[in-house]
Amino acid sequence: MAATAEICDTNAAHIVSGDLRILHPVFRIYGQARAFSGPIVTVKVFEDNKLVREVLETKGEGRVLVIDGGGSMRSALMGGNMVQLAQSMGWAGIVVNGCVRDVDEINGCDIGVRALASYPLKSGKKGTGEKHVPVYVAGTFIRDGEWLYADNDGILVSKFELSI
Image (cartoon, rainbow, N blue to C red):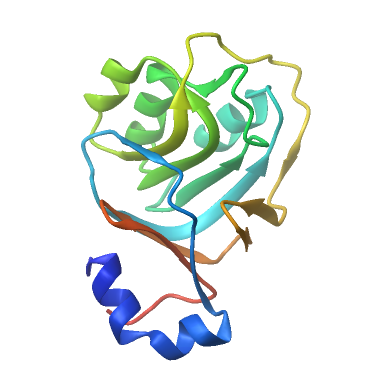
């Protein structure tokens, strides 16, 4: 994958048009994979991770899960077990607009994870929320089927797969 800085440099017209968006730099980096990319699957939840697990139990096929947890800092939407599940199911990465826990376990996994922070309390399991809906995360709308590119410099979302 090309570096996000290089993608920005070579796709300036897409940034101007809004087809390529840069997420605000609010995420911490977890996991072994420092760079990842793929088509996006969205989940919108609040302090409840049952739908997150349901999505991660499906074949990832190199996709990236974007979880809009409303930016909650009161519970972790995923921990080491769910990240290990994501890795084994073939997900390329996960972006969490919320918290994670079991950071040492996550950092041992060969997958890319971005989250706002770590927090030791697990979330609820009621199953409330929505899958495959547009979400608003870190200053931009993100839709199911768009493409995400992440590395140490930042996170980009594109309306289409970029030829890089």
